[in-house]
Amino acid sequence: MLQINMADVMNVIGSLTPYLIAIGVLFVLALIITFAVNKKTVKDVATRKIVHSESWLVALVGIVVAVSMMLTGPLSTLLNNATITKYTLSDTTVSKANELAKDVQSEAVTLLKNDDSNLPLSGKKVNVFGWGSTNPVYGGTGSGSMSKQYKTVSLLDGMKQAGLKTNTELSKLYTDYRKDRPVSQIWSTDWTLPEVPAKQYSDKLVSDAKDFSDEAVVVLTRV
Image 1 (cartoon, one colour):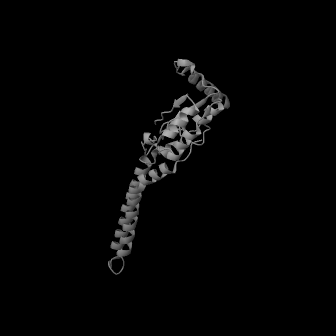
Image 2 (tube, rainbow, N blue to C red; image 1 turned 135 degrees about the horizontal axis):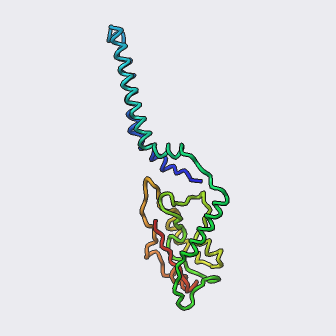
Image 3 (cartoon, rainbow, N blue to C red; image 1 turned 180 degrees about the horizontal axis):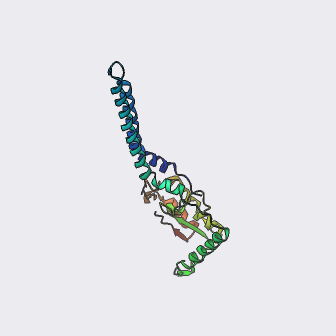
């Protein structure tokens, strides 16, 4: 299930603003003309009727044009998604897709050169460096992105489940620096790369990390 992003919704509404303003202006002008052209200002009844009808006709045409431009412009994708035929994947298809994804993942694993027999890390203490270790990226900025609607396991939780003990002092450094990831949406993206400046790695922190473990994993996260 896709998560509705209110920022994207507001951007769509913002894209409709010029059209809505045009509709409002046309409606107000038609009202002004209707009230301005009355028995006191125009004595001839036929003339008043012509002016009234023509003003509302022009307003109606303008409103129809504005609505058409909205439907074929900013709202076209939304309307298309709402009206197209929707299909539901069967449990069998989903199961096969999941198995295929696991096969692709296992075949895409990159082998590392195991100098000094550092691998596997199972059952060891590990220093995990990098702000992204506490806030990983699960996808890009479009259809490949993952939201809270999807079940995901964080990097640190995955390492703990694998029997590793991570340096919580390092993790606290990163979460204290920044907990949330910069906004990354289709309509607007913050390309900030939040990494803790080197000067914030105190001598004590580095010394404690060395005492904690000789093993380290460095996490680089980019969108």
